[in-house]
Image (cartoon, rainbow, N blue to C red; front, top):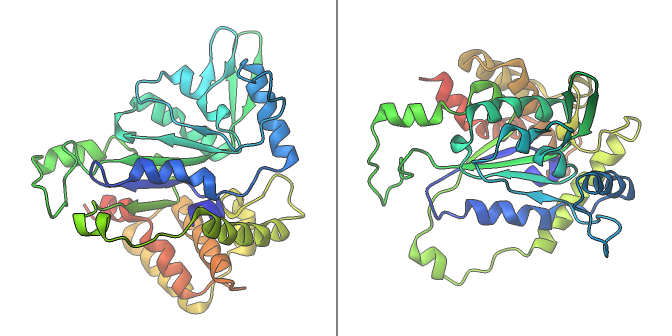
Length: 304
């Protein structure tokens, strides 16, 4: 679903539940880059000297996974001679932030602007440079410092206060900018050894491409909008029309939980993607209800 709509996603689960593996598989189900996207990405890698001599054109979507000790400049870009950072190296691809709460607070806060604006502007005394940063954010975190809060098979050693302090490292404004929050539970031995075949990436990629084709047709008159996650508030109002039952449900949730206008728009964007995957022309209450379920951390924050 995140791949189909280009949505930012946060996975929460105990160590070893497969969060990193899932993140690294996302590029395999994304649609191939267009020639225009390949040119944009190639320019960035050329600027930083990362373009291989035997590969004149970057044709694979980037997957960048910086360590949580990275500096603000390394993540966002800058320096005495401004250069692109990881957010720009992930342009048209995936930026994976593992152990999200372990990143520096300032680094996480400066991440808000490129997530919202899809570019980064670096200003020095005599120069101002803007680098593109249109990436899909994929983040992962443990539910608590020890990693086992809510795990039915491991006892959590954390106090409630330490759990809240740990989760508070991810600010509300940053969570607002992440469309989908999902829990990734640990797998038991029987599930690991049960022999059940999963879907191949090719099958998932086919559904993703079908949904993306619908979106490309929908936004063909809007330059630089290629998927639902990139819709502006104006486009959300135009293409995020929901039925009466969905409207009543969304109104109740927004008012009861005190969600922001940004969270409201992101729910509609995800609901539009759910409807696209289902092949539905309109957005129904069932699509809105499912999209609301992917705002888990919003609900937890607002109900404390």
